[in-house]
Every structure is written in C-alpha cells, then in structure tokens.
Length: 291
Image (cartoon, rainbow, N blue to C red; front, side, top):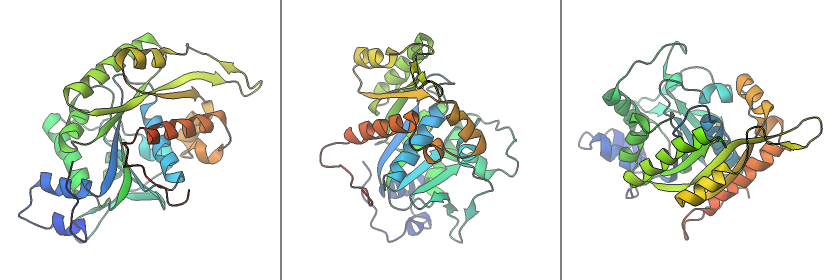
C-alpha cells in the first residue's frame, strides 16, 4: 500500500526533482482509495464495456471515479463516451483528464494522439513507460476508484499495472463459452502469480432479453462463469446480458445507462456494481456523496 501523500497538491511531488517516477506514482496513487484492473485472458468478451459501465455506475452512485484506458493498441473508451480531442497540459506539465461528468475523469492513449487512426507500434519497455506516465503525470486528485481497462491477455500492460500499483485488484471478465473460460483461468493464475487480489469474476453476454417478448434467451449458454468461479475459488460478481443497445450506444458515444436506465442491462450493471462494492475489505466501505 502507498503511504498517503502529505503534499497539498501532487503537482508538488511531480515537480520535486529528488523524487523518482515510482515515488511520484506512489504519491498520486495514495490519493485513490481503490484501484480496479478490468482484465480478461481473451479478446472479444466485452471487457472495455464492463470497464465503461462499472466506472459510470460507480460515478452515478456518487463516487469519485477515474477511468484509465491502457489498451494501447486498441483503445475504445473515448469513443464509448463520445470523447474527442487531445488532453490539455497544465503549466506544471500535468495531464488533465477529460471530465465526462462531475464524478468521472477519463484518460486514454487515444486522447494523446492527433490522429486517432494512428497505429501504436511499441514493445514492452515503451508500453511500461507510457503507463507509468499516465499514472505519474495525470492530475487524478482524490478519487474513490481508479478503474483501469487493459487489453486482453496477461502480457505487458497488466504486468506493468501490477508492478506500478501493488495494491491494484482485478475484476476478471468472461463469456459463457468454454474457449473464453479457458483463457480466463489463465488470467486468474496470472493474478495469483503476481500477488494481485481478485475482486471477482463477471460473466458478460450471458444471454439476451428479447426486446419483443421480454423473455430471456441463452444465446450461447449460461452458468459457465459461476462454475469457473467455484472451481477456481474466486468470487462470482454476477451476469451481464447481451444488449444490442450497448453496441449502438458505444458506436454513438452514448452509454446505455443514460439512454436506457430502466433496461435489464442497466439493472444487471447495478447488481454487478453492488457486488464489487460488497467485496471491499471490512473497514474500507465507501460512502457515496449522494446516496
């Protein structure tokens, strides 16, 4: 755990030439109560959607939230929120996150590029350096949560997060199919090898609520996430249904929690968020400002 920074502003730490990059990161991370790494061993499971809706749901509950997109090769968070334009830099050389609303700040590599279609061709050390820069140079301030969206797999990006933020905890995303569950088991073992606490496992796209008859349709199958969590002895955080409006909202930059707050998907996100909150250690429960 990072010791709480006693500076009035982390810009003071960033400007202290005696402090190393790791010490500056420690200073800034000490102002954030909980850091959640959303990860999966397999692509295409809706990991960025889960990170998006977890962060937005927490913010809607009144928590102060930062959302950091470290999927350096395929960032999608800005488009899902309809965010455009590069990030501003302060006189102290701090990066100012985009403020989606009063409780949610967002940073992504896409917000650092003039051309959003530019290909990022980096190897491990460069990736580690960029993630360290996001953590050290961004003006996150005091937050209840930092939600970190990582690319699929157990490579450079999640490894860098585990090294730079030793108290980060993992939220692991899967879908019901066995091919996804097999890769998720690797993610669980990755967390155990790097001593990263696992908040739990969430099953995404577990089925479809038909918009015509309102009946639940198990498109693939259901229950695989729960069985895997039981077998691997990790908490199960619930199921999120497949909703075409989530895809449409992502394309339009309008999250479905705002356009369809009464939908089955929104209800499932609420249950998932409460499950995450319930996993906070005793004595560290957060009280939202407007609950």
